[in-house]
Length: 450
Image (cartoon, rainbow, N blue to C red; front, side, top):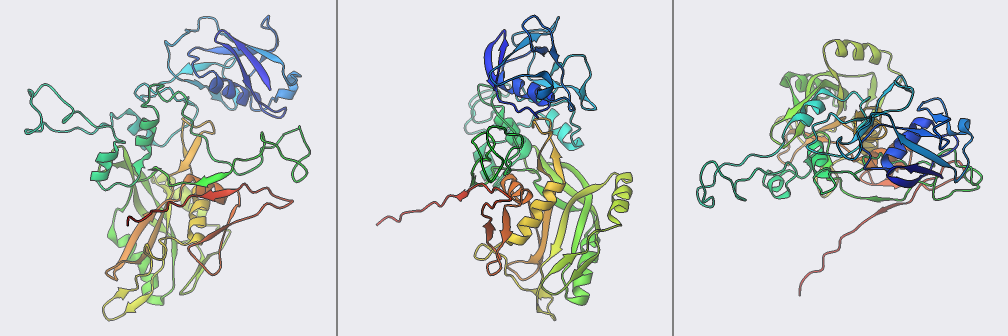
């Protein structure tokens, strides 16, 4: 624990000896949420022994001990007290571009958002465009309820926010878009000042020196928090479309000929989805089918795939990227009619546990760049498309994404599929080699009226 003395008062931050100094600056910024000026940190009150932000230097190199005081001082010429909004750490090649770490005003058009922003993260082009958009839903003059002139407005015709629950319900949108969720975070009186986009971690934090390492010891500082499973209010991608229907027909040709299942990777781009406020859609331009062994009931990828890097390079030159994966789960019902069985529904499952784990694994391999996260990424835009039979026994495609919670549980090896119930996953128990946090879920019981 270090005490940080500043013109705004004294605060405390928790760091480890192995923590790099860049993380110290980020923690100080998060702790002093109202700082609107450039500053430097010093070990001494007389501004000697400056702490320089670096990805290489650790706290141990400055000889600081538990309970020591460090000093925050505005850099000469810095503007104080709210003339600038949220701040970012400008880093180039892991080292501050100035002799002292400088926090700069945000240039994001987040409509007054005070969420800390990192300027050194290169976001997807669609995210940059959506950040500059107004996002509100325009409404026309209501001739019945609006009793004012054309140049005025009232509660019946005022624009709606992109996260308005009643409007999304009218559109039959269950999950708001990710950028609508960001607008909601910054819509309060604090302007999102205390909103955090922290990635979930199920691992013990390394470097805790207060006790022996696991399994001999663990404390509240290094122990990951228990996870309570909740429905995610937003989604990173709102729709998936194919540029050409022949792409799907060619992909399904293998199953039609052999009766065996198939997996492919979707290459395309992300664009604005106009049917959902501040929405994003994935546009598929090509399907790459990697080496695989398949049967009528299963598919196994053959790794490593030596052609994957070549495909990625060719796609990049065409302005495309890997945006998802697609797999078939088709069982013929009547060959003469071309119908297939319908067995994925609310009574069984939409995605099996194994498929959710695969989706979480692929999403972790393709993180979503995000300037509003301290890690530089948050969630994933990687989509999952399942080709199966619908309620009319026709070939049908459904798009999915697993939540950030599921993605973290899969990444940190906390989940395994069950053998006899494909819709259920099993949370591992802690062992001497690995600590697994507790995983809870909620059940809502509805009491019938007599």
